[in-house]
Image (cartoon, rainbow, N blue to C red; front, side, top):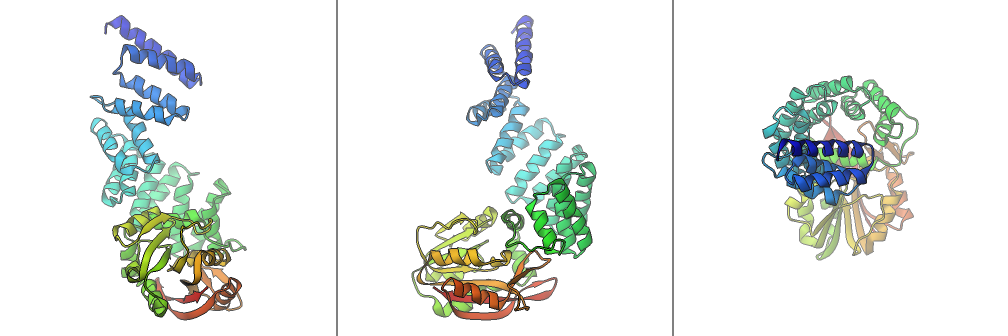
Length: 433
């Protein structure tokens, strides 16, 4: 292409770009397409046209352009970035990784790309690679608050609490109105029982975002608000278990001496028969599922955390697994002979809706078995503790069972796990429809 033709193409591009930014999309599209007729392998024009389609919510037309531009030699880096971002938005983090790696071969000091790569690694369970990527992100983009917050999360997940707090504080210093590091800091301080510091961060979150359910709930759990909510926000519960899915069993069994699944099974064992339709409600990684497998015609697992379900699938025990919010309508193709739930109802104060839904999903004569933490004050129904979990009284449990036509078969009070080195007492309950 001669110099005059190149100048013409670049002038058309500039005019099209100006039209694009001004919202004159049809005019811009016409210009970009004209360029690609003259210079069909110009990645910058392909990428620009793809972004134009994204701005019009025409993702199906944008993706082929990004893929084509990313496949050039050398690749168009803007197209690579958009393609990686789209894959992550579709939860295809594994697919985004090679795209970001390709970009970093061309621009090894691109902090934003390192940050996105770190997120992709974290979401695919590659914790060490994620940490390395976030460290690279802050090395090349020290003023990127999101990268500091992500580094804090990665450190927090590995038990490096002080460095995590420092990273969160860096993020807050850069961007004082950034909600995530305030919330993350508050949760760390709450775990340390430094409630005043935790409260200050939660109140800052609510100042920035008054409708933030997680900050409101955590504030209520440490007595910062007079009212007690009926349940923990589903996004909060999902976040907890998404973050700990990778090392969930090591922490729960190894450090907290968690034994609820085995204890509940022992209490339930006299009532089990062969070929049962069984629902593991809030199945997590499938702890205890192997105990029920010999009695199951089908074993269905549901959980609010997709990452926990991925771990459960690795056990190859369940007939089916699906993401499920307990507070939403229950729709299953069968009625269950048994619904069991270990350490799930501790995230619900008021149990009526859960019990009502479970009873409707049970076959006649079906059993329900669950655990809760024990509230010693029998004059109350339930109480929310600073752990962010609820405890329930025996009187309230019996009231709920009676209200929805369940006969109590067995109830045991026992230590179900440890917290800060101390045993936590709970109730194990088995009832029949």
